[in-house]
Length: 227
Image (cartoon, rainbow, N blue to C red):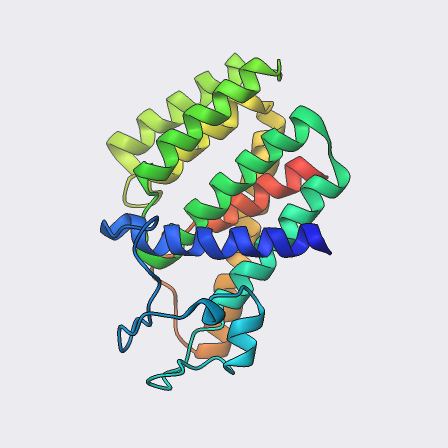
């Protein structure tokens, strides 16, 4: 239970990073505030899970509704953090922690701003590669060559259909999987994306013209890492 709640606290911080970093706002020193009335939040309004429930999803000053997204993000990351450090130890747990945190942050920025945030992608990507190399994880040159060829095709011919940011993300993740595993990741991502698109269209009677794909790539990554 302690692991889960610590993960929720960290998830709350990651939410702040994902919402502020892409638009150039400080996320380390600046106090948290209501996005509607700009009122600075007091310490007891910043307790992960409990504060938002106690305030009934409304700002105590302006009474504007607080999106349930905040609670969901905290709970989801808390659950992932719990799974990683409850079931894994040592270098594997550290690698999974960095990998999942990278995927989580990039999924949030893609959902909120439709971008694969470079300020997250490159530092986390370099850190991940360093750890994987240091801990002697298997590297697959054939997968890297395949991804470079696909990246060339996308950059020059297919950017209207597949975001190049998504391709850069795959270049960081893919070489540490076999081509077969990479296809599984892409299959899970594509299938889950299609299912969500279909359900959204059925429920809202509206079609989706553009879909943030990083969350679905992250789902494919979780499938490979844990199954």
